[in-house]
Image (cartoon, rainbow, N blue to C red; front, top):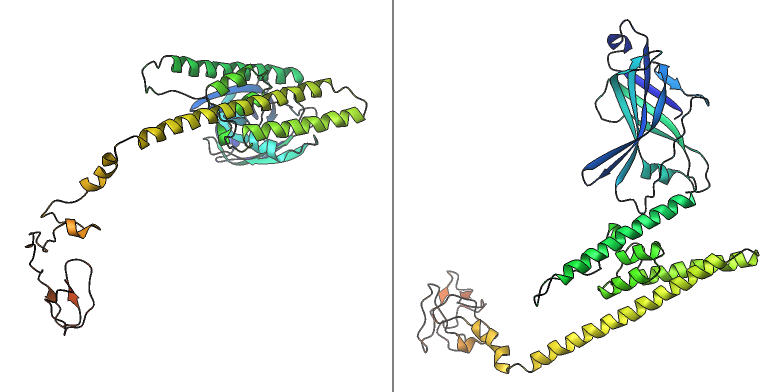
Amino acid sequence: LNFLDMEKTHGVETSMIGREPTVGGIIKMRIENCGDTEEVVLGNLPSRTFNEHILFDSNQMKTFTVHNNSHFTIEKRELVIDIDEGKANYFVPVDRLGSFIFELDDIEEECGSDGSWKHLLQSLSNERGSLSRGKAGIAAKKCRVEGEYIGRKRLEALNLLKDQIKKIESFNNGQSLPGSPRLSANIQGVEGVSLLHAAIQLKDDGSLLKEMMKLGADPRAKSQLGTPLSYTKQLLDRTTEKEKHLERKGQSVTAQRARCLQLKNMIDMMLSGDQSSLNIHAAEGNRKKASVDAAPKRLLTCVSEAELPAAGDIATVPKKKKSVPMTTQKGLPLAPKEAPARETSVSQSNISVCGPASSTSGSTSANDPKRS
């Protein structure tokens, strides 16, 4: 935190009569997910005498570390600076002045990958407080994540993924009746990223991916990352290039070679599983086609015959006009050999009939059999 610019609605003296007005507060991370809110306090702000502009020097600056990845974070994460008013010497909050809220995704987007500091500003939020206006200035930068943290989060995600697969298998095992609904592993998350994508990213040893393929996971399902198959090939190409780069520098490439072998096995597994799925679908299609071809032809024509209207119905004349009696405008059936009556307009320039309109000269007889 670098500085705070604040302006109170009624002035400081109104609420702090007889006391020296000071400001302090807390910095916290707020996580919102599906209506649930969790707050993690990162630390306290040093108390300062209230002023419209408070500048924090290097000794008073507070630096906090938070984890965020905009590509894979589902919940909404915010950095919240709550500003409180209290009494000097021993700061006790007596009034909430206001809050400044930074979205961690926005901070991540603004910060460069070179690790340099980026200065960001944020206006006072709309939450209730005594401040009428205000701005907060912070400095932020990206840091490398610790290896221990990556390993721990990877293990947590893999366990969650395994639990999901077990739930799908448990549900399917309980569906014993023919035609019962069944679940597949084609579950997609944010921007179409599937369970297969997750298993590949988490460096699964292959056992989880194999279970997903058995449950019908589609290696060609499209997403923002591409299909699982194309994504794995991209990872393989990048890992191979990194291996060559390290080899040229004389460094160890053991980890890269192991990862390349793992990715190749994943690709082979997806290709073989995809071909098995295609063969199953082709066999089912052939069985359906055979059952249709073996059906009596009478069944294939009954639908069109059933759609023909009965005599006396007011309906659009189908293509087989000879099988449907014509009707008058009142819905009464006409005699089989009797020509329908025509209505002639006053100008005798056009003649209207039941059916398609005819544009004919008035000199033509209305009872002309060709026109009927």
